[in-house]
Image (cartoon, rainbow, N blue to C red; front, side, top):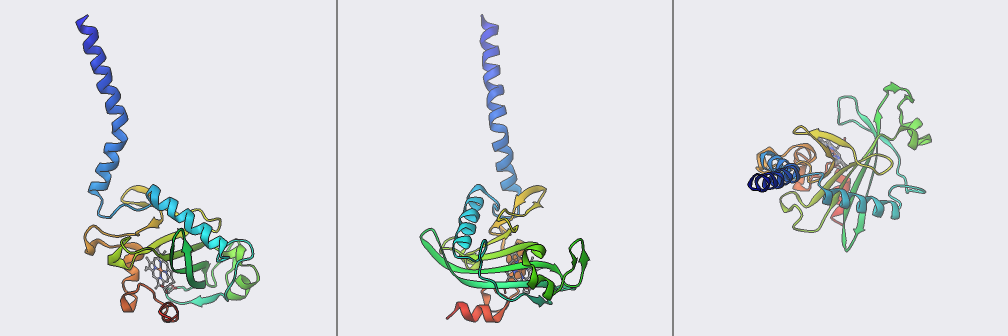
Amino acid sequence: MKSVKVAKGGHRLLLWVILAWPFSLYSAEQESSRFVPVGTPADLQYAAQLWSAMVEEKIEGEGRKSNPPFFGGARPHGEILELSDQNLRVGSHTGFIVVKRNYGQAGVADVRGRVTVERVTQNRAKFLDSITVMYQRESGYDDLHQNWFWAKFRPDGSLFRKRIEGRETALAGRLLKGKQREDNAGCIYCHSAAGGGDYIFYPEITSRRSH
Ligand code: HEC
């Protein structure tokens, strides 16, 4: 009789350990991370909402409004880029969005052939690699960094993933906000170098935003 009771208690403990294990791992990861959580379920949900709003406003998707592609020379080899910016409503909030379409390294030949402005102009879909987005959310989201929500989308609207601190992470959210300011990395870190404190590199975008 007694031994049965002990066994039952043991099973219950085992069950508890099994159920709680993924959560304790998750919180241990959060605690040991240098960054505030990114790619969380809430970030994924927001990214999906943002993408829908972009498609609705024809920033992406069928019949989208296009701008001329150009050679952006910031990197060693330069990329063919296309930029757009405007105010966009997501849920009950209206914020400024900047979208950068990345069409591959200029002049580099791959299975699609050489990437040039002319060829991209003729067939954008063929060369589009990724869509990097910064969207200014409501205040309180990330006041230290102008409340930008950062995301890297594939042409179909799904998110890129990357290993961050050993964990496969969807690229959406406060990428990458350090728990200490000096630990900032990724989009936020690089874009802090853009003058004027607004995290935007292209001066013409900055001036459109402030008008
Ligand atoms: C290594 C530094 C670096 C990182 C990391 C980086 N960017 Fe940028 N980004 C730049 C530079 C430099 C420009 C301007 C020149 C260009 O377009 O290449 C830029 C331009 C942009 C623009 C056009 C608006 C502007 O700032 O003028 C967007 C949108 C953007 N990046 C989004 C992102 C997102 C989203 C991430 C993270 C997933 C990211 N960037 C990560 C350096 C970086």
